[in-house]
Length: 95
Image (tube, rainbow, N blue to C red; front, side, top):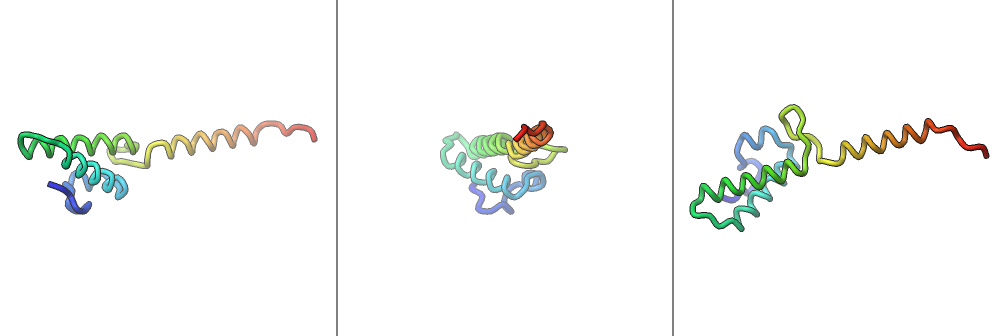
């Protein structure tokens, strides 16, 4: 079964993912559904849901049981701020 919109996704998925992650989940699910050849529809559905969850977990961080910001954004931003703080605390060179 292909999902045409985020509203068609299972409630347990919609309740924990932000909108961009829902879109990623839906696209991954649909793509996996199209290429998976399984003996029955249930196996195909399980494979597609598994692939979609793995893709979301790769792309997003998890905080307090909910999906947070895209991976990399937070840690890179913190590293950038740390570099700025270190640079500003260095003594200035004589002119």
